[in-house]
Length: 613
Ligand code: ADP
Image (cartoon, rainbow, N blue to C red; front, side, top):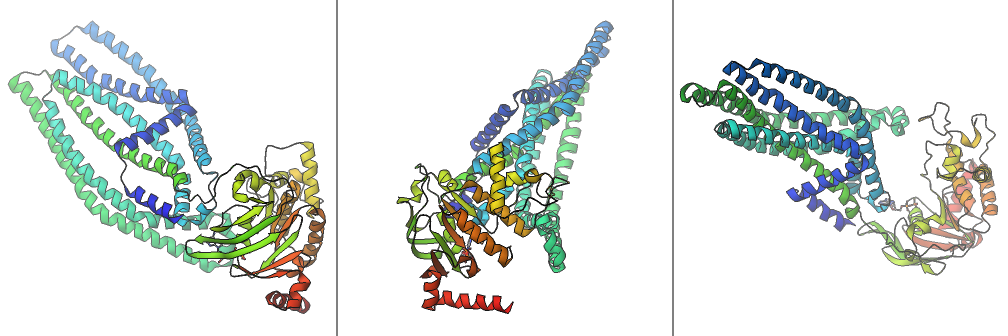
């Protein structure tokens, strides 16, 4: 897992080649044209048309009308030219306004959506292991957050190139025809600007790289302030709020310091570019040359002088714009490449095969299973155990002993480093992973309630909305001891949960949410049910009753329970006591108590606590 990540890290340090930049632009072009073909064609048309009209308005018209004035006529030609010109400007302005105010705002969300879907499609099946890899996870978050700006940048770049190429070709052609000499001054100015831009670019990249960790920290601290997940904690522990604002200010201070350091150098380069390039070369030298041609050599008319001066400045401006656009294109290409490579760099620990999952109640055999999240730090050591079909198994032990990790392996959220897990005699790695996972129902401690209706929270599927489904959902909720006769549930199972988007949404208590999570597994009636601390938010009596009920309902299913409260697991067919990633005791409750080992010790402590309370 880590080798792959390091490789890709090295890969990212390499600069993208022109071919790679073009390839990623091509990818964005096909994606956007596919999503909004007419809008994109309009975008290109408007970018080109604008520059054509600017060329006619500011270069060709100056040359033509001044030429007529210098020659003293014919005025009728001038009049008709003006009429035509004004009509063309009117049509062009109206179409541009329509494009900017209506077509572009309608097209942009379609493109954002298309790109987001592309990212989603590429990443939706990433292994859970990816989320354990901090570097990968950070890149993933950044990629997802930046997707809209990537499309905006692409549209901008496309516009820059369409207009740049149009202006460059028209203005260069005009200069070559009217006054090629002026292009020498333009070339000098361009050379100087590019040299300085290269240096500025390097400084800006260095500044950005130095700012990046502080900007990421600042973003995180910002999120802590506005996300509701932290709101309760921050109010209860104002010290943490204090720390966050301090950290935020520290990050801001560092970012300002970096801006100051690089700002000084950028200021020097900027001044040289403006003074030497724009003022001395472009204006003083150009004007001198042109006046010399007009007044001394008499090779140029005033009309040709003014229009060629304008055209030469357009040649240089459009070249500079395209070079700046290349920087944007490169930035975008790096971003797109990062998205594409996310799935390649994703640590793929889940092998993909095609056998359909077994439809019989699951029986499991774990043989010498070892697993580690990070290389060299195993959290499960040589686990061997048998779970019979329809058996009720309990995994117990103190925090961090590896219980949840073991059930994650059963669910194939991870594959073991060594050893094997067989379900009904078949190695679970041979099953198609989606169908296998689908055959298991699970409730974890960190289950999530979604901002959707109660029914959708049980179904976890928005496509199924039949009457039968509603009945089954109600039954699953009933079996999970969730009471629908609550005045807050005004729309029964259609009641929206959470107040995130719905004013009359309902925020459930911890215990109620847990019951909804349990109802999810009861609804599906899968071959194996995994309950990781399913009832920790319930009071002991409610928990006891629910467990009795679950044992009843899941008679024909295999159940693996994890619980801290040994009272909930005492009826299990077999209890496995875990410690530091190993199974240290196994047997029925009575057998383990009689053995007087660690389980018996834990039981005595808990029984004592209950008696005391
Ligand atoms: P339990 O369920 O018994 O409390 P877990 O299986 O959650 O224990 O954790 C076992 C060990 O694995 C702990 O040391 C925990 O810190 C570590 N661990 C759990 N999840 C991860 C993860 N995603 N990445 C790295 N280590 C983890």
